[in-house]
Image (cartoon, rainbow, N blue to C red; front, side, top):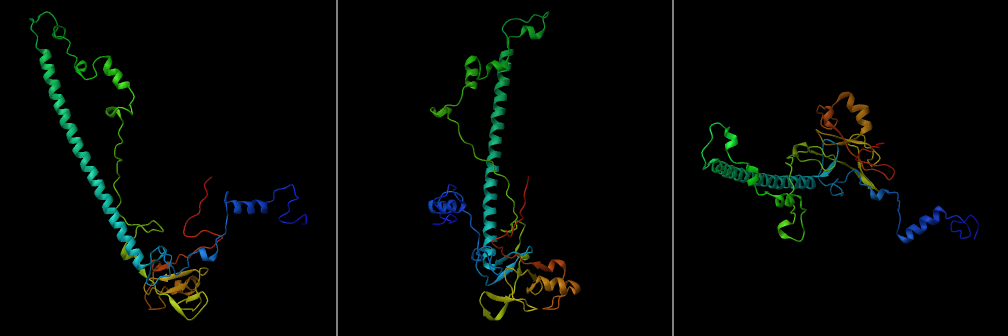
Length: 288
């Protein structure tokens, strides 16, 4: 075994290759791997099912979905919003009922306190006209009539809850629910999404499918893949290359497939799948 071999056992240094080999064999430590092309979503696959689209639709932000998958997602979100709204309304009604009961209890306590004050104001001895009225009345401190009268009440307030006595065991209260939003959002961009915002997409298939190339530009005939920036024209739903859009379409703003006038909102940039070297579909931001 030579001195510079990867598996050199005579060296005094634990090399990086040996560390990585032992880490893979033991299963401990951090394992890094570079994602290949097979781990990335193709440009013609749904962002939810990750399968090739048979009836594709695109959102205004350029995310491609299978029509059935995105409609099922929107329906599920509406049901979930309705369930959360029902739970919120039930909790809100229970809190209102509890507040009414507390108000009734407070009103009853006020009546009892007023009755005790009137009873304490009744005296059996004659009043002295030369003394102030407050001096002739007995001690009518209402606070002494409360349940915390004497040192026993103070000790009871300062005592900690006990987990062994059922009456002193702390109870977990229900979490206060926030009012849910009624807006259905896109699963990829997080922006509001409606069914009317979806645009049908028509891919132009290659006459003779060879290898992984299956679709071409609707106008130029160039092959489309994950490395080719594409755009969807809203009036016709045709998929064209971004190079053709910048070179010709933006000059006349006319759909070359059906001849309709175009606006900036009618040109939807299609979000492509990423590679093993960079992230895709999100904003990478570093905060110091």
